[in-house]
Amino acid sequence: MKALVKQHAEPGLWLLDVPEPEAGPGDVLIKVARTGICGTDLHIRSWDGWAQQAVGTPLILGHEFVGEVAGVGADVADIAVGDLVSGEGHLVCGKCRNCLAGRRHLCRSTVGLGVGRDGAFAEYVVLPASNVWVHRTKVDLDVAAIFDPFGNAVHTALSFPLVGEDVLITGAGPIGIMAAAVAKHAGARNVVITDVSPYRLDLARKAGATLALNVAESGIAEAQRSLGLKEGFDIGLEMSGRPEAMRDMVDNMTHGGRIAMLGLPAEEFAVDWAKIVTSMITVKGIYGREMFETWYAMTVLLEGGLDLSPVITGKYAYQDFDAAFDEAAGGHCGKIILDWTA
Ligand SMILES: [Zn+2]
Ligand SMILES: [Zn+2]
Image (tube, rainbow, N blue to C red):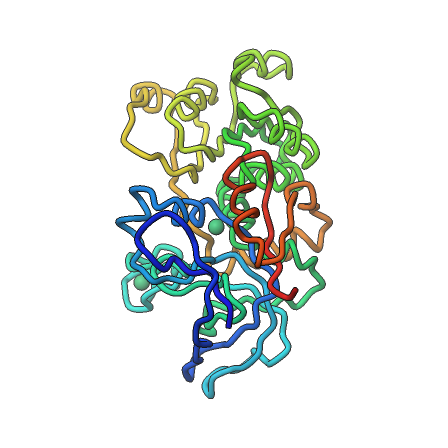
């Protein structure tokens, strides 16, 4: 089969013929239809410092996908050939305290699909049945392909109750934009999203943000005034991993405000801890999706009319992966989809 492989420990990706993966007794074999390109894949392609320590070669990339079940192992029940499925890309150990308690998203030994083991940028991928999500309601294929990052957005946005609340989102990448759509759909009053990319701020407006603010031009305090907020934001969703965004957020929260932080900082940085203490702010780290509460929520949100179409801005046949990755790396885009059926 064809697969997109990190073949050598150097920048680049290689489209190669590799053996089809084999499904064990508890596994599901999936014929991949579409995949989403993630920041993680860009890191692995460019072979930056993170990728060099996290990835061993050769490795098939990719964790955002939708496909059709092509085979199931002898021990698999409730999943059948022909089912439309996506996959939870975090494979958990099943043995640690949190796994045993059913809190699998808190597993201390998570292995990432397309990072720690072969992924979904291929004609076929194999996953344990416990990681497979069957789409039992009608879903757009491109949207189904990005359930993984959509799940990051939903997990972060729904970390704290937000009905009637004023929400600040720092970072208008695809996940920030989806989080804005989710927050608005779920009943937030004002959803303010910040970035420095006019293109991405425009996507955020289309996705339903109340105010998409270019922080290179004006400050968040000014935005608060223009919306008539007097005491600051109730909920913060940090999506950028950037020190200045986190500091801005802390400065603009109400007393007792709650921050869910998904953006992964590249290195340590200082924040005003005295302000966090005296403003009694809660900061919660978010990684991945709750299995499978977040997946359930995603399905229900889409059924309820949540529209993610503004965030999907490009589609390529897998053979054109280089152009697709170039566009994704350029940042003048939302989510980029690779089609594996062409
Ligand atoms: Zn991803
Ligand atoms: Zn575990």
